[in-house]
Length: 269
Length: 312
Image 1 (cartoon, rainbow over the protein chains, first blue to last red):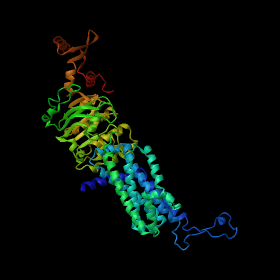
Image 2 (tube, rainbow over the protein chains, first blue to last red; image 1 turned 60 degrees about the horizontal axis):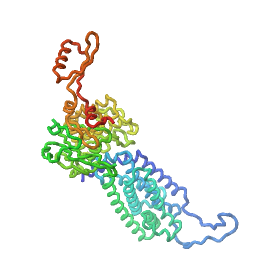
Image 3 (tube, each protein chain N blue to C red; image 1 turned 180 degrees about the vertical axis):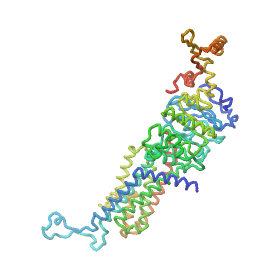
Image 4 (cartoon, rainbow over the protein chains, first blue to last red; image 1 turned 30 degrees about the vertical axis):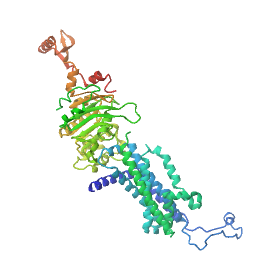
């Protein structure tokens, strides 16, 4: 066990240094700050419903108010509605991308061969990269939520849900990157994962049965799970989201573990 | 000292038979009937290669590019799977060794694999914590290979030769029992190459077993206790450099001497009685201006045995 801890801390220090030198930390902080400031200080917390005539032709007389289904229902702040969406389309995708980038850089620089002729194991390699990416995700989360909806930081379920999803996406990214030679080749899977992962966002804008299949995506659960946690939604949705993301992370861990151990550490070219 | 077996030349397709394996129990590193074919390749890259290296010896692996030298090294360091044959370290089969085996080896790759955004010093320290036991001071090692002033520069700013030295230094840092050096002097100026050779000799003195892969016959000749010529994946010859040169060279000297003001050059064969008498006469008369032994170079022997240039 002490051997693992020594190896793990060695790799952790190295990966942290590389994350800094490759500016992954900088990118994370800048993105989180931009979205955090946008949500916290630029977007309004409430929109005043107006009829289309009033918007297009102000002062054209009193127009009928727009129809609202539940006028008495407590509406979540408009700006904070973007935070769950950002968990799905920003944090999760960044986790996927950074995990893959770390593996592809090791392939590109040949440092994976260097690692392979040392006493470190596949699990040391994976654990270190996962931990660094979770650190980046946590940093992104704290800045974004801290600026956009500070009170939500107090709910550990939200942190747990977001970190579980990011862990799963990071592991998925690592596992998938193993099968590609370089970043240029990986661009297409990255684009596909980014686009498909963002699909649940459209359900927020336009609820529709046609996108029901997005229930199978972790981004669906982090989006609607986070929404339920932040805006006092259905506890069953929260439980389902946490359960799904935990299961996804376990499956992704198996996938990336097998990929790293059986393929990355045994490549012949 | 190389054993009698190691002192024999082997035919191109005649590796050390495995039935002799028990006689090698004293050998530290045994390679037996190693074969390997890359996926999709038409022919094997390595064919039934066998040799052994005793503790504290330098084994020079010579051959042109594509001969299979690096492939053998990769199999021995488990970067490639052992498809056919066997490798044993102190009698322990490579296939059965755990990850701790990697703490015993140091590998210097021909193509430097470094973290470009880390400094030279950080590159040396990067994986050092993975190795148990004592290790050399990274900064002192950088000084030793002439990179002391560049220790805090990023590796991406290093020249090819500097990267080569950095990779070499990294391989030695944890004082490995087995050293695999792939073209360690490639691209280095003669002065730096001499430093590298001196360091390899020091590690040999401390008992490290070295597999030196090179196509530089001067380096191989200087360092190796035993050399093997690899050609088309097969061992074409395996012996001490001295024995190879005696066997394939001529016992002769080339003499330049001046008689009656005329410079004359002639080759005198030491097995010929008249030539020996002539040499004695020239020596006694003090007329010799230059004298060169005519032993074959490893390069020439390689060409003779394989029909190919070593540096090709």
